[in-house]
Length: 298
Image (cartoon, rainbow, N blue to C red; front, top):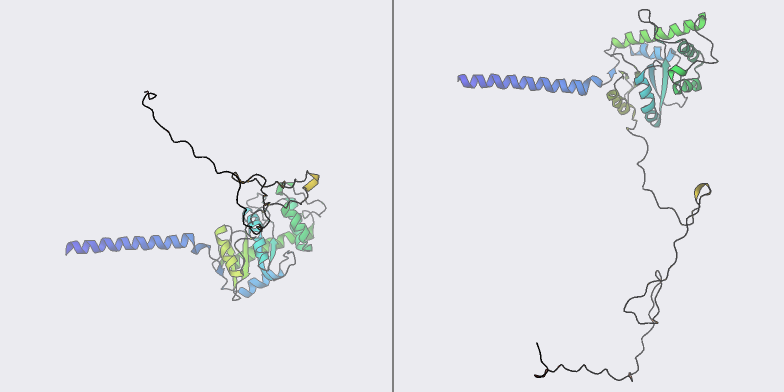
């Protein structure tokens, strides 16, 4: 009895450990990357998104909001890897850029970045956004744009972008969203507003599933076909010479003077006629070998 009780206790402990390990693996590799459905004040969150000065290519379709700042490495990866897939699914990506505030007296944005953010919020210029994203951060000087520093109106626009990010983050935390950038908001197929702090790429697949975006773009490469014989050589190169039309090689045992049909042509044998009896004498048989005792030697 005592042995049975001890075995039951050990089995229960092992079962609890396995259950705990399974739950941790489920949470660590799957659950913590799932998006969060906005359960508290979704109308206020949507109103805040509609009032922000987002930029878009104007393609239309289901809107998806991407809130980020210029130097976010994960934001650049999402723009490069996921934005084309979303566009293929008919989704309109709307980018909302803000300049991060200083942290303990250390600036986390440059004057060129603040000037560009102010211009994007005021003009919503999509080509400007494309040029900005295509230029390395250290090389962007915001040439031709009015400076935000020292300009009361444009400085207020930069501060408005920061207040937008702060207010949106506070409202999303109330619904259980862990804030990281890019911060992505969209509506699923049932119309519920969802949010994701998508710094980790393992969370991106959930967004693709909700909006119906493909996991990969493009068809698999097809087999390379051989070029035609009469195809001209590119760029003035030497054209390929056609394959020579050589006569067929006659068979070894074919009679001399017999016609050989070229390859590719059907062979239509002529009707056979009875051959005339040959007048040539029949060949003589070879003499049989004989053995003489006197001529035999070893």
